[in-house]
Image 1 (tube, rainbow, N blue to C red):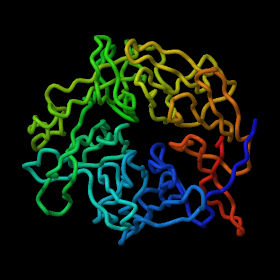
Image 2 (cartoon, rainbow, N blue to C red):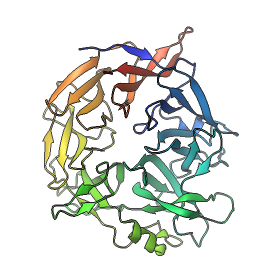
Image 3 (tube, helix red, strand yellow):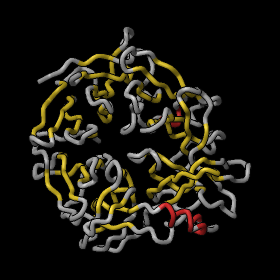
Image 4 (tube, one colour):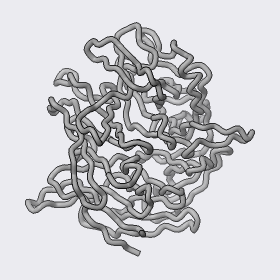
Length: 422
């Protein structure tokens, strides 16, 4: 079965879709950044939206002092509750000496009804004493919780161990986080905290990790422990461990988010010479203990809406990337697909968690979780398909990124649309 695809965007610029949250909560708008190359956030100036039915494009934000060194914007996603988006924004003072970097960026927001009026989600404070609720580096790949109250992110510190990636969370904080208005600092409307512990040299065979990354929220409204206790907010993330032989593999960890404990530990912000630490009472736990771990192909974890399962990529016996399902309560893993080809990148579930869309062989596939079958819905096309397909919250529309040539023969990353059903 192949379905008809149409180009939703046609303007001669990039239209990069983030791996999550590209649709407004009413399904009417799609948000994008103007990258034409995934690696060029630092050179990208524009955040835009496009109407799903009419194809009308609007610019909602543009940097005022963009150069090849920054500031740069990108990786934008909608709140599931409001007409607000969050995106990566490099520091406004980016230059040749200190360009855009993974430790020099923050989360900026826009209400699409008030274009260009930006605000900071996370506070940045690089001057000691550090303000509780602030960070001093770069937040990235922001992801809203299912109820739209919290935001997860990955983080690299600018001052200490900039190469060690961790996972963090932003919490509602009505009074906002206020910091000194000195160079490199900014206020934030949410309270930020690190929630994953990493070490530079994990002990072989232990649960220590040297990297926490590419996470998801567990369930739309949390999940249930074996004891029957309901956890309203939790993050599943990938963590790199060393097995008994000292080989690095990637396993899945979960951290329950207790907002009261996070807000209570004002010292977690850290001192001079320290990275921000995980607040007292917040603990990660490893849920998978596999032989080979997850695939080393970049992808983000996904959860079933009820929080019972985590989905990821792992390599099967043929070394092809396959979809796997992980039971949250037990950590049991099982392969969902056994394709004779490899899945390219990240993937997404539809609203009710019954289907998964993924890219492979320059085609779009739908995997039916009830039937256990993959169906090719877009056959091999001329322009390269990249990134992660996304379902509309209304479920009848699927969008993806594909390079399309313009009249002059130039390739631009456009947003393509598939009507699944009405």
